[in-house]
Image (cartoon, rainbow, N blue to C red):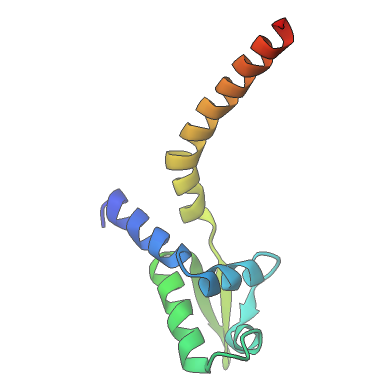
Length: 108
């Protein structure tokens, strides 16, 4: 999969608020699938599993079986790659612009 295709999959995965909420749940520590499902009482288990599957295909979640439990881990590297490629480049320009604006304002 090319970098562009990989980015597309990550952006699609991040495009849904429920999937972002799942990632937020995984940020402090891994969770079992059952624990994740319990956090979404308005969704059935199958739907939550489909959302986790999208996150797995994007590389944002890594699942490991331990006995009968399926543990889900956050993998933030795809988000960092997007940050470095897209956000970081634009943020650097914005910081430079703000620094110049500050200088101009201080001169007056």
